[in-house]
Length: 56
Image 1 (cartoon, rainbow, N blue to C red):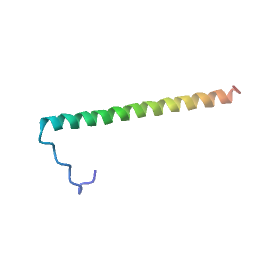
Image 2 (cartoon, rainbow, N blue to C red):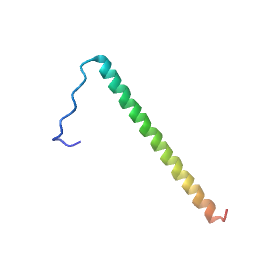
Image 3 (cartoon, one colour):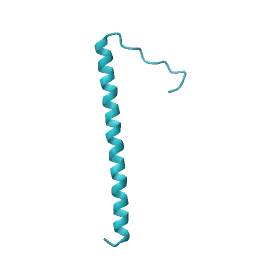
């Protein structure tokens, strides 16, 4: 994040803090799933290349 951009205001209510934390954790979990799917896709691509070299 650039230094010249202001940070968003912090929630004042504890419930807002919890909802924001849950939203950020959900986002992080979504990124972890996407990363895992990309890794699986890479592995499958390697397998396909390997099988293609064997004529299979």
